[in-house]
Image (cartoon, rainbow, N blue to C red):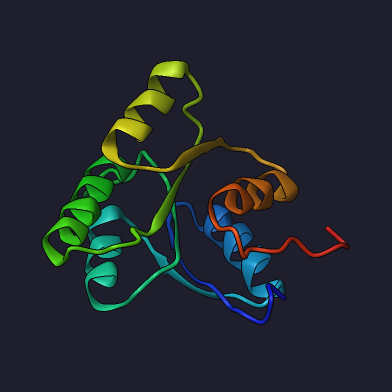
Length: 137
């Protein structure tokens, strides 16, 4: 558990296996997880619920991860959100320009698929200070 605080996490990912891997990892350590099949659905969920963390695939049908992030950051700007949601790109695109594009869109970080669970948890911990990685990981 993370200092007794469960995070609200949104996984925006069109691949069912990747959805299951991420959601199972975070649920197993005590966090609440919602899943969206594409960026459009992810933005719609974000508009109705607060999330501490969003794991964002980049290449999806309907609305890409870059587009969805831009929409989410615009919503936060309009709402004058003091602490924007942490958004981490989880993608197969691993070139420096890809990472730069993610950061320029407003994402906080970038991790490449396939990833080791501990690498994803460490990436989250860099951005959410009260996030605790279980010792057994």
